[in-house]
Length: 284
Image 1: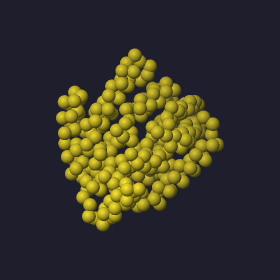
Image 2 (image 1 turned 90 degrees about the horizontal axis):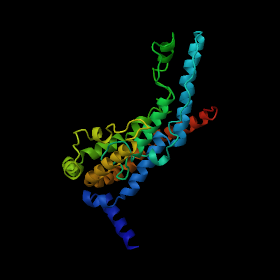
Image 3 (image 1 turned 30 degrees about the vertical axis):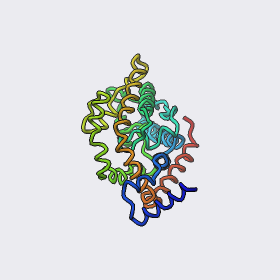
Image 4 (image 1 turned 90 degrees about the vertical axis):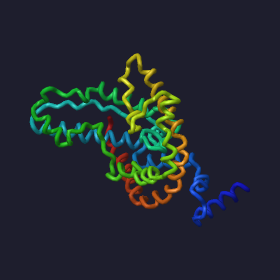
């Protein structure tokens, strides 16, 4: 009961504007903030079921469309086999906490999303999707151009606002402007070098997402996976001082962000649900 009273008083002071930024930070639960960001990311960018549905619909749109285009030209076309890119994914792999390269990325991710992506890309390559004819069959280039020369795996989300919302640009900008976060990241490069021997370039994501995996199967796969995990563990350690501040800043702004964007968020959710309904007509 005592803790609840203290928390209530703290929030009352926050609302009154009489609490310092450091004290406000203590009123935000970073674990809850991270979980909420994950939930919002799934709402915006789709969960596993929704992404699979989106991919399946796009497969029939693109491959079926090229097939129909070639048929109209009197030319043969064999559809590429469908590959479920998200076969091995779970919703836990698709939250905000992995792969964004922000200061408030997850501290516990160890590169699973990178490994899953590379494994999935390998299955796509094995299906022959990128084995283009040289030269292509007559008329095929024109039929591909109807779909922007994009293959079916390059599927846009069903609502155009999903990309922008999913980047949480406003929150990232607030965090990046904060002097406490900048102070927290000031010794990041030195920490990575002195503690872990990593030379991190000015663009941190160039280090985090550098290509370390050769397509499976290969004898160095397990070692590369371990290297990715170690690199991200080092990043989490050296980023921790800034992360603690950043995630609490996000927590302070998240209610307002969601309130401002709620109408569009609802539209995005409706579009994902519609895409799942559309996918029910198909069988991969």
